[in-house]
Image 1 (cartoon, helix red, strand yellow):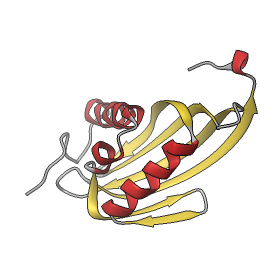
Image 2: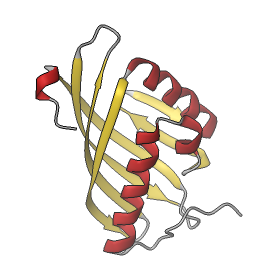
Image 3: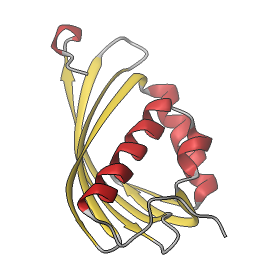
Length: 136
């Protein structure tokens, strides 16, 4: 059976660790690596897009990082309980035209007993910024 430690139920320490592991994986910009944190039948809402299944996650992230260049993400634990974690995050990237953006958002995560994320609901807003305004 596939497991992704730490496992629920979460404590402050294990929830914080889970958030850091997610940040590290997403900053690798390796869709396959990121997808391994999710169940085979994971359910996502990312902005107004719905993504279902690990294969769809790989495709979604591959497309994302072809458009969001020099991507850098920072996640912060917001709340946790049993098998759920809430995070706030921000990330920066630029598009092919060179316009920089900072995206702000919140995610709600739900994990199965093996520590794999079965649900991810993300609300995200983008703000155009100047390169000189980057923080990450």
